[in-house]
Image (cartoon, rainbow, N blue to C red; front, side):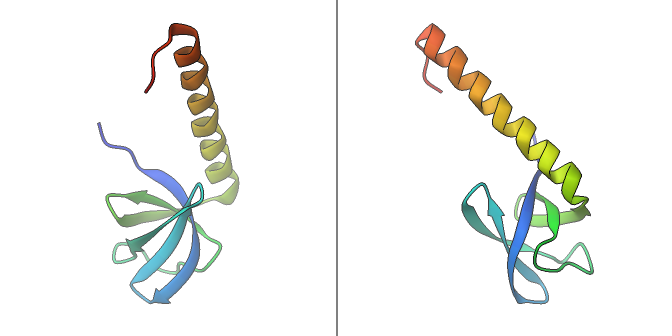
Length: 84
């Protein structure tokens, strides 16, 4: 299964690279596939490439859903004694 996730651009060392924040983890990503990206924008990231820009409200909704899923999985693991 493939997963593309929203990430906020926090730095742009050059025109073709951005450093994004993924829940506190910073990662270098390529901007080769999209244009007009600025610090503060949200982008969809997949395998090290920013695929497109994302509306900030949609990005925050998606990130909140991911966080909720993580909490539900952790709660289920606590109930069943399983560790992910």
